[in-house]
Length: 119
Image (cartoon, rainbow, N blue to C red; front, top):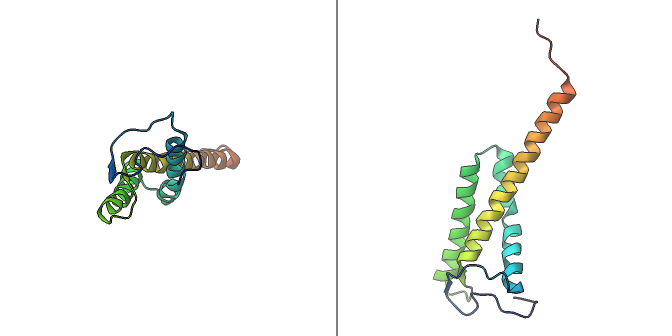
């Protein structure tokens, strides 16, 4: 899968429990791509107005399901702890970005409406 010369940490194993080796470009690239892959998993719950904990739990559960299926189906893929961490992290990061955009949009809308007069 890697185009950077070095094999990913879990290559050839059913399960990889070693944490990310940042000196290996293949591991870093794989981690980044897994973060990006789970961005929609954070954007959708944020746009639906769910809480961060719910979005994080859903991202973790979805990633755990993928990694478990990779292990159980003998697909030739490695069930990797780094994938679980990066997928969950991508979901949470996307949720945080979407929540920040929503908050900024609300502030902009409130500012555009002008001050409310009490009376």
